[in-house]
Image 1 (tube, rainbow, N blue to C red):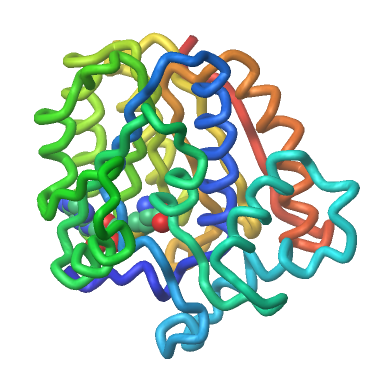
Image 2: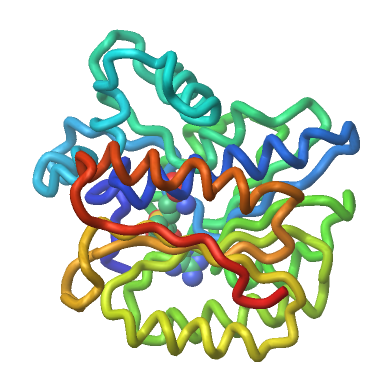
Length: 281
Ligand SMILES: C[S@@+](CC[C@H](N)C(=O)[O-])C[C@H]1O[C@@H](n2cnc3c(N)ncnc32)[C@H](O)[C@@H]1O
């Protein structure tokens, strides 16, 4: 396992994913009934953007830096204001240094009765994650393969919840692994909300993935993509996509309004594209 998210934390793809997660958690919280948040590939929780790794790639400049430096927060979408206030929580000064990953962002939104289950396989990452949530009884961390969680934890006791599958796509079989995992999870629990993050490099790879996904018998599959570059150079992260199974009411409309704004912040208005569409409905 060579992948370390520290090289990528806070990049445009992370920001897109984290804003979408906040919208999904907020929609689950419209009802008082508690829910379970399960993350199969949790990472280490907090990322120091001054670290050698982050400074080597400076990928965070493509994402969080662009929002952090917005002069006025009056004209930004509401979810961005929420997101920035969560990121600010980890940064005591005006300077941005710590980027909170998905477990930290979602944890700050949870209500007392909501529950969080995190899976992470990398020994060092999981150790750091455990430090972040030390003595926090609301969070249970497993040092295990996240795909096992889709067998072991579903359906959750609450019968309400959100599952984030956010693999590192280190191996050529990851798209297939994800499809197998999703298929299995869906068989066990058809009403859960599932979010899957995927990289957009070569379009042909994404088309193949979508084709397979649409044949799995799932009823409501939404796809949202944000590309900063044309998807014709396979060695570059041209964009990022999310597959959302069973998206909540109005989530599609929320993304349709958020993504053009977000792309403009990231590209300065030039180039790129976004799309939100039903793959299966
Ligand atoms: C993209 S990062 C997660 C980032 C995190 N979800 C966030 O948004 O802050 C993917 C993580 O998955 C871990 N990982 C890779 N394969 C795994 C597996 N089979 N099960 C659990 N974790 C895995 C990696 O060590 C890495 O920390």
